[in-house]
Length: 221
Image (cartoon, helix red, strand yellow):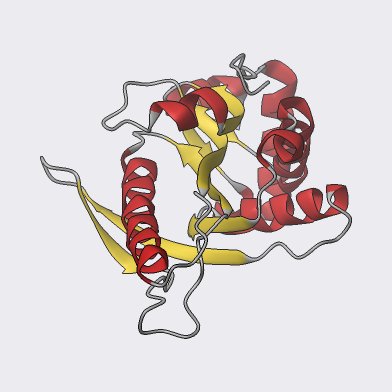
């Protein structure tokens, strides 16, 4: 496919190597480990799976191989006028009834996805986790347990610089919103969407030679 074809179909191709490098460079550029010190990664299914796995290895290499658990949540966006979202999978946080529930007390929780497009999914995930935090906060108070307020952060490989349908808390946007690259409204084709991985890698390398994506210039750089 030629560069002209890429423009016509508005596609950006990303290879596995490019994906890894974007994530690694973002961790270094933003000083993510120093500024946020993640203790729990939450991958949004399914686009957040591979970025989370790569991110976990990079972070663990900086913190001396300490444990860094990963949890998964599944969200489905129902494309209607209301842009409704419903859960297909969620972590267990009911410490009152589930002995295996995840404790959010004192955690630095980094939510990971491949792209921030309309921000609807990320906003929903944050709001639902805030509800879970509130429930655990109340339970800790009832049990006279020490409570350390958790922190929430966001990591996305790409941010689409298009109008958003939802918002994130100011504290996250100012301090704990980590972005690899900015893109426009293009369709991003990730390597896990490829059938012919060699052709996909070739397209990604050619696109990267011709185009230069924007590195975010926010407070987390």
